[in-house]
Amino acid sequence: MHEVLGIPEYLWRPIFAGLFSGIACSITGVFIVTMHLSFLGICIAHSAFTGALFSLWIGWNPLLGSILFSLIASAIVGPLADRGELSPDTSTGIVFSTMLGLAFLFLGLIPGSKASALSLFWGNILTVTRMDIYILSGITTFLLLLFTIFFKEIHAVLCHRQIAVYVGIPTALIFYLLLITTGLTIAVSLQTVGGLLIYSLLLNPSASAHQLTYRFKTMLILSILFGITSCWGGLALSYKYNLPTGATIILISSLIFILSAIFSPKRQVKGEKNV
Amino acid sequence: MSRETYQDNTINIQNVSAYYNNHPALDNITLSFRRGEFAVILGPNGSGKTTLLKILCGLCKFQKGSVKVLGQTPSSYNFLLRRKIAHVAQVESIDPKLPITVRESVATGRAGTSGLGRPLKKSDWKLVDTTIEWIGISHLADKPIGHLSGGERQKTSIARALVQQAPILLLDEPTASIDPNAQKDILDLLEHKMDLHSFTTLYVTHEISMIPNRCDRIVMLQNGKVWADGKPDELINEEKLKELYGGNGFCCSGKFSFHHTHH
Image (cartoon, rainbow over all chains, first blue to last red; front, side):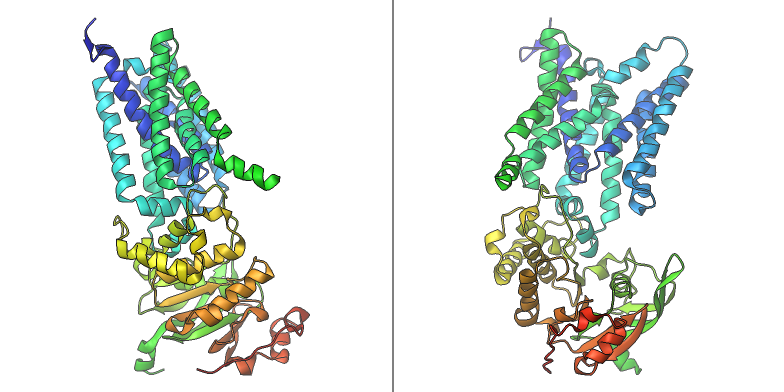
């Protein structure tokens, strides 16, 4: 077997996919966790999954459908929640259930074997193509640039949205930019982690980082580190013990969250107050 | 009003009406505020005080009339105008785990002014640190904002408004929802430490005891209309206040004393 740096050549693509998915999902997760939009993340993840099934039904590349449906979900949920006519949870719930209904519809309409459709449930990082890596690296670079250039605006919108409006930051622009990027990240990471598991990779690393620090910059860095650790750790476990990769990635990210929650200084502060 | 006077005014509100679900929040209001004026907008809950401030920031639509702030029409897309209006709202509950410190929260005041996509300069951070020290919260600078008391959070808001270095300052019930000691502290800061005449200041409140003594003018709102507009010593008396608040005794409980000083 041909090896590069002692690692079998066929594992290099999954390693890069894990790196880029880990970074992109963790950064997006910081947006979702800080703004308490976890349900929105779940909704967009399911929409991306529905889009992939739609693509399989009509013979497109699953990535195209994922991107299209996740953007549609973001475009519907964002303004509905923003305008305050419905509570964010209600509007997200309606879009979520509609997307789930469509997913089952498309699953039923896909002719022949459902194997490729079902593989979207848990994803397969081992089968990512060179093109997938390019797309993943593109969205990761875009996210890193977005958070670097607009750091102060993003920090203000995430932590002080109302104040950000009053000090003259184009809050809606920043919010929708983040929302659309979330949709894109989820869509392109779908094949790596799978439709049902992706929101764990979105939430767990950033929720873990959120437990450990009050510094936004530190939270971003920790979240990225936890995301990469989850992807690479899961990949290693999966390779060594022949386990489903999506599951091992998620379980490692969950373990990191449990440890973060146990050692969280925020938890100790609460405990001290209770004494 | 002569053209010169019009131009000297920082804020001009002409025949403005705004409705919420067909209910008038503001009903044909005409007001103007000159540069450096410190006015208190007084009125019971629901009289249209906050709507008025939101209209000035472009965050509330109005159906009739015209509004000019620093010669511009406010709108939700007029970010540049909002950067020239500092705003202190009443304390609201926030997530105690929010990843933002007091220093970073105060620096948010510079986030708009410094320009989109441009990091804060050293001079911005210096201004933030100097203001934090001047307000007297430097010992809290590295604390998470969610760990502060209501009074401390309000001092942070005032520091944020000051670093914005805006010509207009809007104070929307800054002493509401905080304990009496903190209220006294904030009032003292606004009244004795800050020079509210260096801005065009609109101070909204419904509590008579929270009116700073040094204000130039009182505008009384009732049911969305300007009910009275004049000097504090003309308007702040038991008879007027009873009329404004519909005979409600809370505002005239005897705790109130007003000693206006002329400038």
